[in-house]
Image (cartoon, rainbow, N blue to C red; front, top):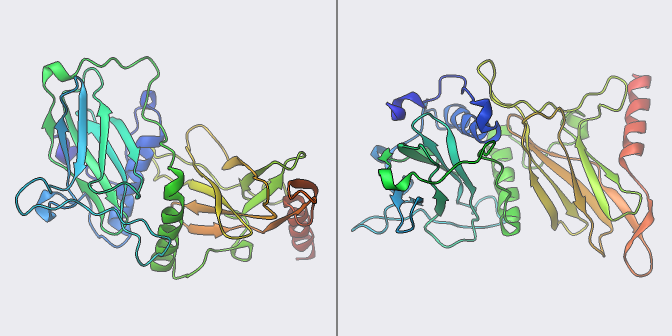
Length: 336
């Protein structure tokens, strides 16, 4: 019953007590499975192949289960590879593993690190009251896969869930940043027919604008230009019974050498704009923000130059900032 009930039907009902991020991610993966090249109204299963199938087993530690992608422990079996790369043509990995219980609650989630050796695995505590589970995984190249439903032995369901506990954002490991960027570029080319990120020339609502802190040691990124008359901030819409999710899934900032300073995974729950802050390290002279919209792809904002003192620490002069960009945008709108 669980295996048939979770197939995509245009929306995904959310138990608000469980939090919105994890069911929103699940709903978006189901959307992508149907509309982004896989043409499937539901996840692939073991019938489609074992290498991508996420299998749940129970560990020797009480109340703990393990998800493993692939069956390489069996004769003629294979584990899914984990291939980190900054090259969009080479990167290939399991991006996420998550688990649903008998009530379709997402009870565990892992944003996997492509640098971990295969197999892709995830160990989690089984919450109290869980009687059956199904694991899912997303392969960046081959889509959404669902494993066999497993029954939870009575002795493995004792872990208490504190009031208010829910499945939450699992931030990416720093080592996953370059592979994630490479996969965004791969998707940008495949689904949006562009080899590069979109820019302000393509629209302001998706553009990530940088503001530098007064002490010049951090930057804040906001997506959209809602501070300008007639401008708008990008929406942050979690999945609901009435609408598919639409949100900025990630914001990240690169320096003058293209190194990723930081990457943030965003939760659309109870927020009305996409915003986050990153610290600036010594030696950084320029910063550029990127964002990924789950529906509209990769966007790059204007580069902000940080003029440095002799010791190369962040200084007090910025040659091009969010305020100047928005002022220019306001002038342009007035002239139009």
